Image (cartoon, rainbow over all chains, first blue to last red; front, side, top):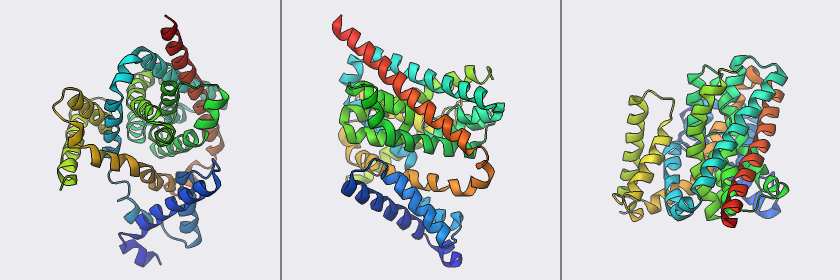
Length: 230
Length: 117
């Protein structure tokens, strides 16, 4: 089985997109929030690999091409920001203050929990960049000598979490302003959350996309300060 | 033919961002430089939205699928992280909810204050 699959350029890609589509159909039919296409897609792929005893390498041989344009897709989010330039200018102060306080909330809560759980310094810096975009969080984890693979997992889980809980959490906290919604989602759960923000509305999506970049940059500074504390 | 020149532009920006990432000694990933470059090019009018619109929208549309392979990668590191996994999960949950709350509330308060004044 692995012999054929290792040579296949299409198996991993087809499985990934197929699993995503199953998630989409499930979500459309049921409207159930946990049937997030990414969450369902990951679960189906893992289940298939486990049941048929397929190596991750054999899967990723094809699946890596699905993610091949991830960086330029993230760069493309700039057009959403540009299209919302007037909204951005009008709310500039709120955006900068909002994102900065969100980043501070993220790193401060990681610090508090790390002390509570008795994390090592390495485990602490591993989780510090968990709210920001994968490419940037990985680089930061490497820079501060964290467990890079765990950081990646933490970022993906945070993104899926944000994608799943953003709508009910915003409702619970009575955050109704579209700009505030987008900033809360993008600052807490990067591009994965932004996928949800784009579903809610264009202003939310643009603000969330903008928050990925700004929150990432502010986190670079925040990590320089916070990594020295614990 | 419109997709090919559009992809050329976006890929070139991606390449320029990679160069900046390699040359500038800061832990800033390439895609962040890329967002800044593309945003500045659009704001300055050097690049028109029409030059990249369709391809950029396509990439944004399909982006959710791109995160699945990374998520599936969890099975590779599972044995390494499974002992601390509940602690890591607790950090993710608490920190994410807290960040949504603080970022959302602070932004909303600042906007409401500005509207009043």
